[in-house]
Image (cartoon, rainbow, N blue to C red; front, top):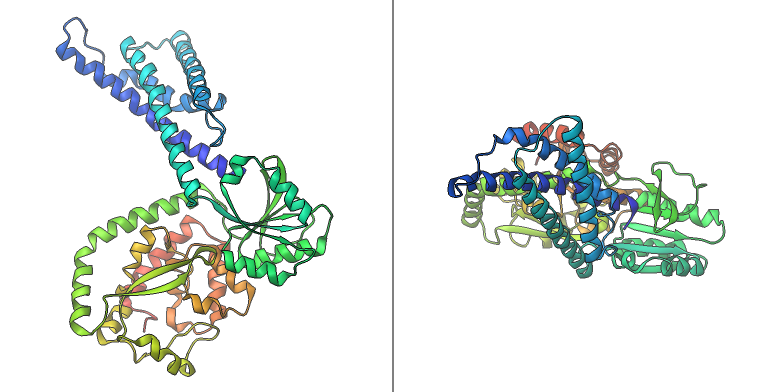
Length: 463
């Protein structure tokens, strides 16, 4: 696990634990408050607001104390006995902090029994959360769902030394798809491996300062939108932003031409799935109406399924409402000479394969609604470069075109709000996608979504 990802998961666990400790305080208070009804010798406790300071201290200082004891170390490093010991020590630190508050700020503990219950329930809940989250993470890693596909390239001995020097736990989190000896194999082999394996990261290992070979490899990764990692600081880039990181003690320079993992990207992912889930429920009656209309007006399936290239070129099946007559794919070859789009993309105004209902669905973008399922599955996003058919991606004649695959494809993009089919130049389309990638932010996503709504309602640029 890289330092960036490790830091991200650590902060996420701290936020979850903070909320969990706040919930434990509330539950402890309610248990003590309700006990008054059934247990005569217990006195009624003060209102909840008088114990808020305890709740705030737990939520703020609890995760800090746990972090000081090493509770948020990477997966595979903490044993159960170590976790329990860390929880006990952190609990002592929190109790000392609470005692200092009582002494110096003259606050008081409304109920000692609430404090006792917190001391029991808090560590127990934190331990359960840690065990469950780690077991889920390890399970996903072992299944391969969270294992990062990486490519090793460079000198044979340097690659061997690097890989064998990594701890077993870190190797478990990686799927090493191929090693390429750049001293014996050329850049064609390297590029072929990038395309074939759909890797998200390339690790370059050299013992000697082979600037030319490093520059070639990093330039290829840059144009493809794939992270390149190496222990060097003398490589020039035009788009990628160099950052410094560590991997198990190895100093690395990261040349990233796409937004790095951050809370903003995490928020984008969460919002995408929540919005997709809600829209699928809200629009289900409309889905049913469109499905019935498609079945009544033409022969063939309700949904059109096509293999598209997603993040890093990973293939997925994109869904649309069928807008063409059955067998439209077989007619494509006959219409290629009428293609109105430059480059590898096929676009045709007044396409004879489109049904009358399909023309309406396309003009209103209703045919795109099933892609909410792709967003819910995490294959697409609401905003991002539009996914192209796999056979069109294979025809890219410039390596820079593939950098549009370095972000998750979207339902809408700058191309959509710029007139869609009115943009006939594929180079211009790619330029807009790269502009989006290089300037990505949640604010930009929101702006594109807001611009998309009136354009879809007016049917601008849709044919």
